[in-house]
Image (tube, rainbow, N blue to C red; front, side):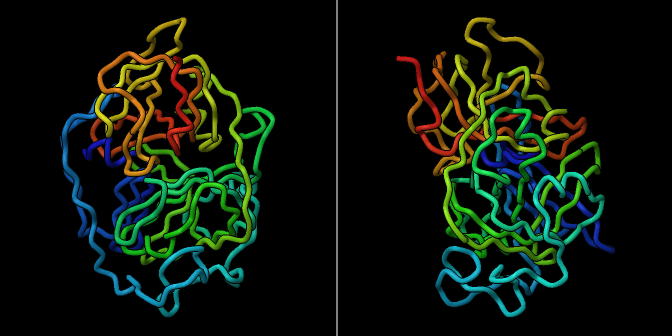
Length: 325
């Protein structure tokens, strides 16, 4: 199992013929079956020290090119034949995110998502040759958590193709092309888009917005909620946690009610979507009361036996974490 301090996003896996491509959302995303990751086990309240080995691509689709904003809203051009999202690929179906949820494809389906909003990017920005994760939602805001159901998706990006997503940031309005499917292998159950050398995809900035969170409570944020409704951008109020190191997750609980639930029921605060994948404004090893915590709610499901699905809140900046004075 890989360290939760470094690998903290949902997981997609699909067999394509004799080979398979895997996406560990929130961190490691494998390009092909020649890749591997190793590490020690982790607990819901925080990670143990571990190491992971990022996948190196064996596919010629790894690209380099001239700079500019064409196609990806950031640095790096596209390799010949790689989509740019300047226009909708003719083989794709244009759909709003709720329709994708209605389709719920079991195998990769080419979709075009016009004008969706970026709510989080791993480490605050994709980097070439490093696996990445992006969350998008259909509209800038929703009135309630119920209204935000089935309005968002994760996008997992393999290291070999991450350069095509450099420059995408929170608040961007983007057109997205990719292959979407629900991964149900080995006990997982997640709908999302996967981008690898074999499953091409892109995102182009077409505007800007201000995605705003909806109010939520810890009891509402469960694994079944995520699997049925997607990664909502939420704000929690009056929660407490005991911090660990700057790169480790830690459990949250209601400040009044105190800690409750077992390892599969606790929701943790993760630094993976912060710059440097680290907390910068929290003292280590202290019980801390929070006025509010804002972030995208997701699931971290590392490959392991037995499979454990960890519930995570992913803040994007230090401003998403308001400590009680």
